[in-house]
Length: 467
Image (cartoon, rainbow, N blue to C red; front, side, top):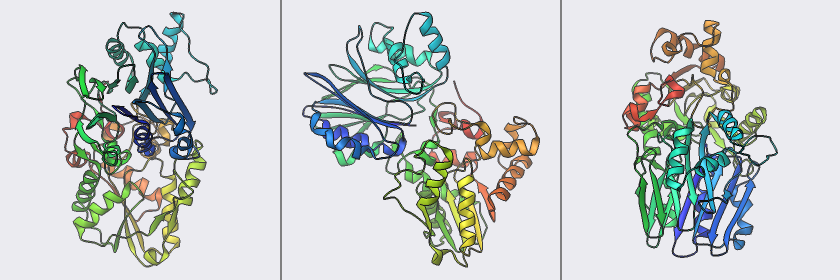
């Protein structure tokens, strides 16, 4: 996915920019970058963070940065920020999102005799594409509006200019953006959790497609929000940091409610409730509190030398890293009927291995409750599961195994409680060697989040969405 942070201050902002960007490290695994602007121009740095933390890559060179305004990014895709010279002036840009019509945009750019920078992997930088689209217009506002209308997918962006920062949320608000204030400084962030320790108060949530211009004294609206919003529901289920809020709704609180609803619909008898670390913990606490059953940690996570379970680009290595990070506690497993909660099941490969470890340690039963419905459709708007083929999704793969045709009756399989839905879940349960398996109903997930269904993107679960 990725995360953004920007700040405009009356005093030097480098330390705040560094820590504010670092607070987004859970959202991306590929590149980290910062850019500041001062009277001498731009200072920029980009580092590979696939095998290390953002902090360790940037801390030693902070003394070379100086400025009162800057932008930072944790990117799961391309190297950023970019610094662009144009008729609009020189500006820095960072983006988060996904461009589905990239090939068509490249073709049209070549027809206009345009060009792009060469990259080592031969893939055109999507942030450079956005910058090119912006620079076709006569103002930043017109350029941002045009780019948002042209791209298919989503793109939230920050533009660092001479006088301040443009903050633009993607057209349908699929990715979050929030403004924070403290005396003498304004910040913008993907996560509200970046604000408290830097002294910022959450001040404003921009709407879908809204464009703001930030200065040290505050912000002003340059383009109004649109009427339709489709914020990603998976932010609350998985991506979001527990301390963050989106649209004023706290992530951890939603996870407690998800777990509680799962418990209300459950009658299985267990001895201990646990969460798959880290994002499953909140769901499990909600379940345990509702059922008044002890919460425990039969799996503990070893993190000192394993920064990210999904760090390597190779899926086989990601699975290995994920396995090495979770260590079983035999004393809490042996002879116990265990209930695990997790955010989702994407491929199921690692979960199957974890379940086997629990039985090998003497578990009498391993039950699993999932905080969202079965994932059947690959994400088309962010980068969640986008690197995997459709049939890497265990739900979709199971449908094909049952039907013998990949796309048959998908809408029926997505209907909670239908015969086909229950058959799919039972087959997944058998594959994963679980004692029992249940998924959250979509209407219960929507209720736990607290926004109307039409203002949430639930495409990966039921195939519905705006474009």
